[in-house]
Length: 181
Image (cartoon, rainbow, N blue to C red; front, top):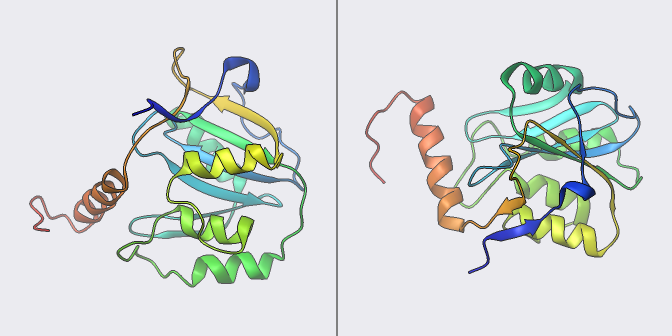
Protein backbone atom coordinates (compact mmCIF):
# COMPACT_ATOMS: atom_id res chain seq x y z
CA UNK A 1 0.00 0.00 0.00
CA UNK A 2 1.25 3.47 -0.89
CA UNK A 3 2.29 5.51 2.15
CA UNK A 4 0.52 8.63 0.86
CA UNK A 5 -2.88 9.34 -0.68
CA UNK A 6 -1.64 12.69 -1.90
CA UNK A 7 1.99 13.70 -2.05
CA UNK A 8 3.11 17.28 -1.85
CA UNK A 9 6.64 18.61 -2.02
CA UNK A 10 8.05 21.59 -0.17
CA UNK A 11 8.49 23.28 -3.55
CA UNK A 12 4.73 23.04 -4.20
CA UNK A 13 3.66 24.73 -0.99
CA UNK A 14 4.43 28.09 0.50
CA UNK A 15 5.26 27.84 4.18
CA UNK A 16 3.53 30.59 6.13
CA UNK A 17 4.08 31.77 9.68
CA UNK A 18 1.34 34.40 9.77
CA UNK A 19 -2.29 33.58 9.09
CA UNK A 20 -4.85 35.74 7.37
CA UNK A 21 -3.13 37.43 4.46
CA UNK A 22 -5.26 35.61 1.91
CA UNK A 23 -7.52 37.14 -0.74
CA UNK A 24 -10.93 37.67 0.86
CA UNK A 25 -12.86 36.82 -2.30
CA UNK A 26 -11.19 33.43 -2.86
CA UNK A 27 -12.20 29.88 -2.07
CA UNK A 28 -10.01 27.67 0.11
CA UNK A 29 -9.87 24.21 1.59
CA UNK A 30 -8.42 24.05 5.09
CA UNK A 31 -6.94 20.67 5.95
CA UNK A 32 -6.40 20.56 9.69
CA UNK A 33 -3.98 18.10 11.28
CA UNK A 34 -2.72 17.38 7.77
CA UNK A 35 0.00 15.21 9.27
CA UNK A 36 -2.45 12.94 11.14
CA UNK A 37 -4.66 10.01 10.20
CA UNK A 38 -7.28 11.06 9.26
CA UNK A 39 -7.02 14.83 8.76
CA UNK A 40 -10.07 17.12 8.89
CA UNK A 41 -11.26 19.41 6.10
CA UNK A 42 -13.12 22.72 6.13
CA UNK A 43 -14.28 25.08 3.41
CA UNK A 44 -13.79 28.85 3.08
CA UNK A 45 -15.63 31.02 0.60
CA UNK A 46 -15.51 34.82 0.63
CA UNK A 47 -13.91 34.90 4.09
CA UNK A 48 -16.55 32.61 5.65
CA UNK A 49 -15.63 29.22 7.11
CA UNK A 50 -17.79 26.07 7.03
CA UNK A 51 -17.03 22.70 8.56
CA UNK A 52 -18.94 19.55 9.34
CA UNK A 53 -17.51 18.00 12.51
CA UNK A 54 -18.23 14.84 14.49
CA UNK A 55 -20.33 16.69 17.08
CA UNK A 56 -21.03 20.12 15.69
CA UNK A 57 -21.02 22.30 12.65
CA UNK A 58 -19.31 25.58 11.80
CA UNK A 59 -21.55 27.78 9.67
CA UNK A 60 -20.32 31.00 8.09
CA UNK A 61 -17.70 31.81 10.74
CA UNK A 62 -15.31 34.64 9.97
CA UNK A 63 -12.17 32.89 8.77
CA UNK A 64 -10.05 35.23 10.92
CA UNK A 65 -11.34 33.33 13.98
CA UNK A 66 -10.19 30.06 12.45
CA UNK A 67 -6.82 31.53 11.47
CA UNK A 68 -6.29 32.81 15.03
CA UNK A 69 -7.10 29.36 16.44
CA UNK A 70 -4.68 27.66 14.02
CA UNK A 71 -1.97 30.13 14.97
CA UNK A 72 -2.61 29.95 18.73
CA UNK A 73 -2.76 26.14 18.82
CA UNK A 74 -0.10 25.67 16.12
CA UNK A 75 -2.34 23.23 14.26
CA UNK A 76 -0.51 21.62 11.32
CA UNK A 77 -2.61 22.85 8.41
CA UNK A 78 -2.62 22.83 4.63
CA UNK A 79 -4.53 25.66 3.00
CA UNK A 80 -5.45 25.05 -0.61
CA UNK A 81 -6.52 28.04 -2.69
CA UNK A 82 -8.83 26.93 -5.46
CA UNK A 83 -9.14 28.52 -8.87
CA UNK A 84 -11.96 31.02 -8.89
CA UNK A 85 -15.51 29.86 -9.18
CA UNK A 86 -18.72 31.28 -7.81
CA UNK A 87 -21.01 29.73 -5.23
CA UNK A 88 -24.04 31.35 -3.66
CA UNK A 89 -23.47 31.80 0.08
CA UNK A 90 -27.08 30.76 0.81
CA UNK A 91 -26.48 27.48 -1.02
CA UNK A 92 -23.32 26.79 1.02
CA UNK A 93 -25.08 27.64 4.28
CA UNK A 94 -28.11 25.50 3.43
CA UNK A 95 -25.97 22.56 2.33
CA UNK A 96 -23.83 22.46 5.47
CA UNK A 97 -26.85 23.17 7.66
CA UNK A 98 -28.75 20.25 6.16
CA UNK A 99 -26.40 17.80 7.91
CA UNK A 100 -27.48 18.83 11.40
CA UNK A 101 -25.19 19.00 14.41
CA UNK A 102 -23.86 15.45 14.49
CA UNK A 103 -22.39 13.21 11.83
CA UNK A 104 -24.58 10.26 11.01
CA UNK A 105 -23.17 6.91 9.95
CA UNK A 106 -21.46 7.08 6.58
CA UNK A 107 -21.21 10.89 6.58
CA UNK A 108 -17.83 12.65 6.89
CA UNK A 109 -16.49 16.20 6.84
CA UNK A 110 -15.72 15.68 3.15
CA UNK A 111 -19.31 15.09 1.99
CA UNK A 112 -20.62 18.70 1.75
CA UNK A 113 -17.33 19.91 0.28
CA UNK A 114 -17.47 17.24 -2.41
CA UNK A 115 -21.03 18.28 -3.25
CA UNK A 116 -19.96 21.94 -3.50
CA UNK A 117 -17.05 21.13 -5.78
CA UNK A 118 -18.47 18.25 -7.83
CA UNK A 119 -22.24 18.29 -7.39
CA UNK A 120 -22.17 14.88 -5.71
CA UNK A 121 -20.32 12.86 -3.08
CA UNK A 122 -17.55 11.52 -5.28
CA UNK A 123 -14.62 10.97 -2.89
CA UNK A 124 -14.20 9.01 0.33
CA UNK A 125 -10.85 10.51 1.36
CA UNK A 126 -9.25 13.96 1.31
CA UNK A 127 -6.28 12.73 -0.73
CA UNK A 128 -8.63 11.48 -3.44
CA UNK A 129 -10.31 14.90 -3.60
CA UNK A 130 -6.95 16.69 -3.84
CA UNK A 131 -5.82 14.31 -6.56
CA UNK A 132 -8.95 15.07 -8.62
CA UNK A 133 -8.55 18.82 -8.06
CA UNK A 134 -4.91 18.59 -9.18
CA UNK A 135 -5.76 16.59 -12.30
CA UNK A 136 -8.50 19.10 -13.18
CA UNK A 137 -6.13 22.04 -12.56
CA UNK A 138 -8.40 23.54 -9.88
CA UNK A 139 -5.67 24.21 -7.33
CA UNK A 140 -4.17 27.68 -7.58
CA UNK A 141 -1.83 27.73 -4.55
CA UNK A 142 -0.93 25.58 -1.57
CA UNK A 143 0.09 27.04 1.78
CA UNK A 144 1.33 25.14 4.80
CA UNK A 145 1.46 26.08 8.45
CA UNK A 146 3.18 24.29 11.38
CA UNK A 147 3.76 21.07 9.44
CA UNK A 148 6.68 18.86 10.45
CA UNK A 149 9.91 19.33 8.53
CA UNK A 150 9.58 15.84 7.03
CA UNK A 151 5.98 16.35 5.85
CA UNK A 152 5.38 14.81 2.42
CA UNK A 153 1.60 14.81 2.04
CA UNK A 154 -1.67 13.28 3.18
CA UNK A 155 -0.88 9.85 4.60
CA UNK A 156 -2.86 6.86 3.45
CA UNK A 157 -5.73 5.83 5.70
CA UNK A 158 -8.83 3.69 5.46
CA UNK A 159 -12.56 4.34 5.71
CA UNK A 160 -12.36 2.40 8.98
CA UNK A 161 -9.83 4.96 10.29
CA UNK A 162 -12.33 7.75 9.53
CA UNK A 163 -15.23 5.93 11.16
CA UNK A 164 -13.17 5.10 14.25
CA UNK A 165 -12.05 8.71 14.65
CA UNK A 166 -15.60 10.05 14.33
CA UNK A 167 -16.81 7.47 16.86
CA UNK A 168 -13.99 8.39 19.26
CA UNK A 169 -14.80 12.11 19.02
CA UNK A 170 -18.49 11.52 19.53
CA UNK A 171 -17.76 9.41 22.62
CA UNK A 172 -15.52 12.12 24.05
CA UNK A 173 -18.19 14.72 23.47
CA UNK A 174 -20.74 12.63 25.31
CA UNK A 175 -18.18 12.16 28.11
CA UNK A 176 -18.44 8.41 27.77
CA UNK A 177 -15.12 6.85 28.55
CA UNK A 178 -16.10 3.45 27.28
CA UNK A 179 -18.27 3.33 24.19
CA UNK A 180 -19.69 0.15 22.80
CA UNK A 181 -19.96 -0.13 19.05
